[in-house]
Length: 126
Image (spheres, rainbow, N blue to C red):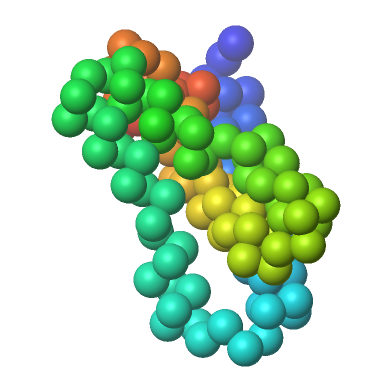
């Protein structure tokens, strides 16, 4: 694959992630209008605690990071919240989804166990 196609695909993926992030944030504030923007901003970065697993090993770090950044997990959390009738769990799922999309805008994908910089979107920092 040539560099032009790779570059346009990366741009396309980042634009898609930006749209998903914006939609998730907008939906959160539509459904939870009483949540203060500064509280949301503070909570928005909490999924990054998954990086603490890297203090144990790259394998544990990749697992803990991916658990909190996987969009499927985020959607399942929303569904579980709906089934349980828990607004808090739905909110957490929406927050996880928005955060994971935000990270993908900047090229931070799901991690491989080899190194923090090895992601499903390619190596960070190339």
